[in-house]
Length: 285
Image (tube, rainbow, N blue to C red; front, side, top):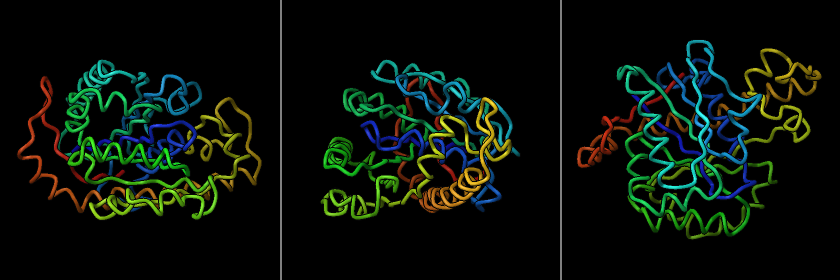
């Protein structure tokens, strides 16, 4: 079955791209992180035309990683029309995926994606048809919290469950006081959202990596382009990869437990026009 992680945050600088990269990396390692079932296919969509740090040059590329086939798409999404167009491309690619296999899609959304989501109902219908899992990378300021609250207010049922990622590169937990003290957090946790603290990759090493996927850096001991990583940098990447993967794998386990509820709720959903109905299921890779 298909499940799609939409990595959002609606503003720049919070770590959406890096979270999407770490999430995709985890999904390629089903056995290591003991995911509920192995993910056979991973489709990574870089929808941030102004900052293609996920699938741009030196980033993710079509390949087979272990038992997982990885494919990519780079398409900017800023308007409802672009959302629908990209949805068509995604549906075309995945329509032949076997329904008895676990397959995953990871969208890295641009800053301001909420404008398109709020402007047109067909955008949320595209996301629903792909079995959306919301991943909100929260910032340390009030605006980041307000934008998530806006989503709750506009689409209370659609944003009923998801994950808030706290990127600890911003500092210790007390830096997220706006979030921790907010009514938005209280509402989110009460309705079924979960928090995940993203561990820190040393900023120097992160800069060294640039767009290099984590698995490439570990496999080759180098960044894409051939520059070798020092021993300390390589150890830092391996350590981060394990720690981040373990945290993010909770998304797969949590959503696996929710799927029976989702199936019941989706019995009343109307499929997006021109698409097949995609049912959610547990992921593993």
